[in-house]
Image (cartoon, rainbow, N blue to C red):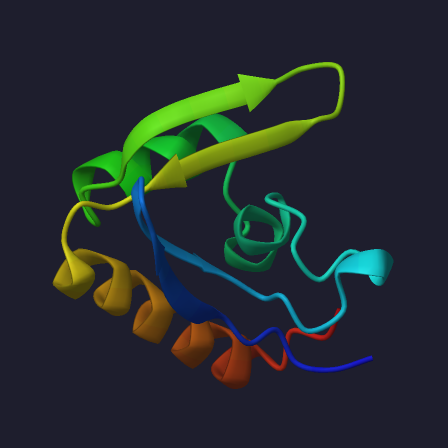
Length: 94
């Protein structure tokens, strides 16, 4: 177990952020953040779009995977800082 900690990286599709430290045990599950923030899943998507300018959302229902990215490093970085700060403040272990 560890406190949720996101990192960011760039790919050809844009900027991404997630906790990739223990993917086999769910560190990268997209629902970790809305659970930590006590948000409905749809409200989390709205937060990503409206506050952090996330784009290119894709949901794979068969695998329960939600993907998105950012065009701007600054937007991605602001999201990463926000998530990591909230995880530390709330002591959100995964």
